[in-house]
Length: 524
Image (cartoon, rainbow, N blue to C red; front, side, top):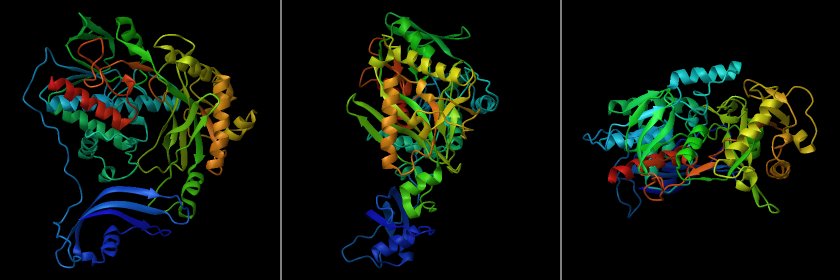
């Protein structure tokens, strides 16, 4: 039996007993519910005095006690059939296919290749998980940046140090496969039905390691500290790659999953003639609140209810005079603001949270859209130059350190300095600064207008701290590719995938991209 919508009205400090709620909804005894599976769970908090949790549930019942005309159902056990990868018979394409990058796009491409019988070589410029976590810890604690192994680069990609959000608007058939794989490798079952599922940074790390081990069991080979420095071409086709240590790998197929911050890769691709174009993205700063403020704004009297957890939010604003959009991005309830630089001499911020979301703070990016007209430098790489300029100014503001410029939101709106010490979760620390000087004047004006609007939408929104800058929302470059095959439009055998391709954003869409590209190649 399928219950399309079971609405459970919350009561303060009372947990939900789903079996009891199902029996009450169907007007049967609880023992007649033999099993159930939650297909969807979402929160309806539009009325603060009547917060509801909405479920879509598949239920198995005993025959006796069913309503007249209903059909008996077999008992349904919790869980879902998992999507398991198994190594197929060995196949060869010239030499082994090479996957560059171990973020979600690269890992899912490698899994799919192994399932189809290929034995990919996977190159990662940064460290494996344990060494990478150590390197990032040293940077956050002491400000010692490793340009090869940091929040952007290393096993698992940038998502390793994030909230691990799995939200997606995609209706692609591979969405279910992606969620099944995450569940297979250790994600909780709730990701299969929550409206806004997340993993948390610690679970992302564990899942990535299990995926890597499975790929190795199926014949894949991982090489760390192996940055691709050159794409080797012959007659318009991939012939191999060359690494920073002058090692060469001959292959006619490369899956390029380098992420949105691999600036040297974009420059190299431009130099060898791969078709690129500039791409719009967004930049701004991180806004940090007390989590209780956001909980009260979203859930009213139900703030802190054990069934709801830490509240998130999404706000948008459109500047009609310039047609620029401002929006919140990558909200991390119960999280922290983290240092995310990948190049010397630049400050970058991002957000991260653990599964429990229990830091007591909330942060999100508040960013304004920028396009090629704002870049100031012509050509496909103009957005990179703009990012570097903003990050470099922030580094100077912070006294040529990796601390972050910060300002209280009310002071930013009033165009005045913030007196006294500014408190933030950001490590290695913040310095009071006039962050209006980071971005072009028209972008700053637009962000101020948007923040005033957000203050009208979320009560107390101005009671917060701005930590700057947020520049790595998405790739500033797009690698042109065929819509169906995902192959480069002018280099045969090159498959740009994931966020670095300029076509996806987030863990799930990047994973789907990797799967699609690998399956596309295998089908040929």
